[in-house]
Length: 341
Image 1: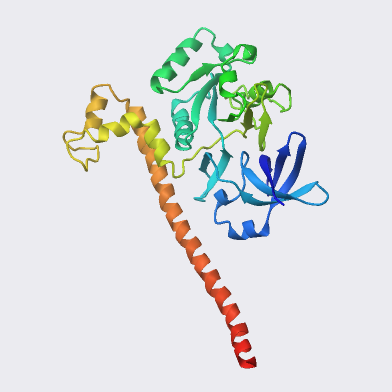
Image 2: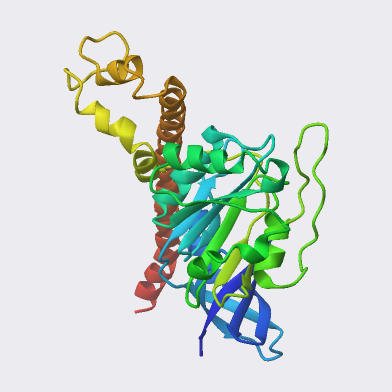
């Protein structure tokens, strides 16, 4: 008999699952799931609901099925692989954490927003370490709200977490949020506050460049003090887009909206007359940096899609080859049975 359970931690090829308030154990996927898996998305991830078989000793379990996912947040795997790396699943909010030091980077925030919007989760920008610039914090918040209209932006410092009552809205019972951001932006300190205990170690950033050290090394799901759930993820030094076309268009809707205003439908936005993009830049309605950022991210998405198509072709060839081999193995048995008859 299979029991519904949720994946609360992922460590290499093992998954910690929970099926009741105090019932947890480590689980591995079944041989059938392993055999049928074609890509990373076919494996469990933190946030997944799965069907498990609890073994006799109750200390181990086998995962037989991943239940349909409501949302999936992922990025392109680091390196040459075109496969996706799942950050979390079945979440309602994506907390994009960045600090008010050298880490604050509008272009990086655009990447995070594209990934969040592509997954149909609601992004929320959290500016940590606001105590570093107390007089300028309000201006930072205002600027980001203007740059990313419709996206909530909140400033935080570790000494004023208790005043951040807006978390009660995002993390009410039945809701799940994932926290993403670079190393050293204060994610671990924030998670410790949200879950009401110092469960995660924290480290100071390097003074020479304001960069952080990895504290969290795996993805974990916790119950927050507000009743909802929060997923902590390791700091990301690299965030490459995969097939995030929908998220890219949502984040850059102001840019995409200009394409239809060009004089020519096949406008390359370079030297063509009547180009709405060039006119918007000349009139100060579109920042050149934002246009360059769109071009860079769009090229990433396009390149990733090409790689994925090639990978899919290879996988389909392997699948066909397996089927042919399996049929050939059956043939001798079929012939020998005929001879006996």
